[in-house]
Amino acid sequence: MHITTRLEFDAGHRIPCHKSQCRNLHGHRYAIEITLSGDIIQQEGASENGMVMDFSDVKAIARRAVVDVWDHAFLVYKDDHTVRSFLDTLPDHKTVVMNTVPTAENMAAEAFRILQAEYQDTYGNHLKLERVRLYETPNSWADALASGCTV
Image 1 (spheres, helix red, strand yellow):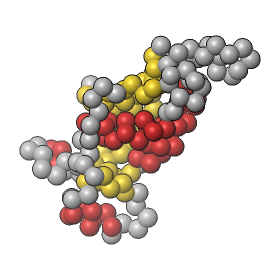
Image 2: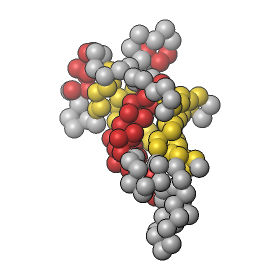
Image 3: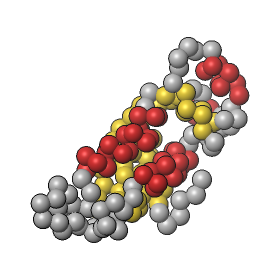
């Protein structure tokens, strides 16, 4: 069985060497979908009975590990020294330094890497992170899949 839940957050970024407008500072209303697979829990009297995982638990983990970290932050590539220097002049600015250029593809892969360690088979139902889908816009997204997620 597969289950999916969706959360949204706002963040800024730039693609330093992009040939077009994305080289400028800008932001997006991102959406992230987390898809897990596992057996349906059959444990009479358990809160999770009949579920793969409680959606509120899926969301709480994703919020703590990714969404709250990236929400209302500027995601900057570690080697984008010009922007990093500028952001350092802003007192108490929420900046997240990334090891890769913060494209939708790299962000999806990074979120997958972070979340894969968070969703463990704690219920004994073969729980597995299958996909992280990151929407940069309503019509454009990147999928990081268990079968081929690399950063």
